[in-house]
Structure formats: structure tokens, C-alpha cells
Amino acid sequence: MSLIEGEDYYINEAGLVVLTARYHLKRGYCCSNGCLHCPYNYENVPEPKKTQLLNERNKKKQE
Image: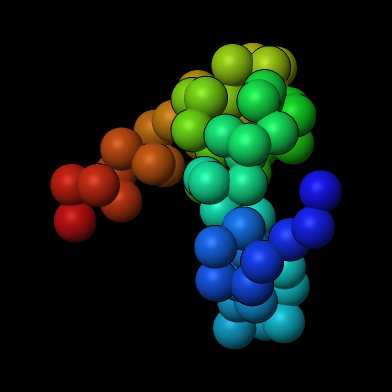
């Protein structure tokens, strides 16, 4: 699968590659790494990290 910058990923301020929700949806599953744009609500991330990530996401949505 070839990646398209701006659609499948972007480079953040720290110079890191960040995968987008579009990329994750094309892949088809949660990889359990706690990705920033996980569209699967971190279903494969073990607790307590899963709850922490969901709480952080909800907090950002409220801001």
C-alpha cells in the first residue's frame, strides 16, 4: 500500500510521521499501539492504557 502525504499521514511539529484515520480504516483494524487518530476506539489496546487514551480523546473534543 503506497502512502499519500496529507491523506494517509502527516509530519507533526516534532518531525514524526502521524498516521491518519483514513490510513487506519484502509488497514482495517486497531494495531494496539494507541495511535492518535485510531478510528477503532483503541479496541486492541490493553487496559489501563485504553481508558487513558479514550479519556484524553474525550477531553480534547470538549475543548
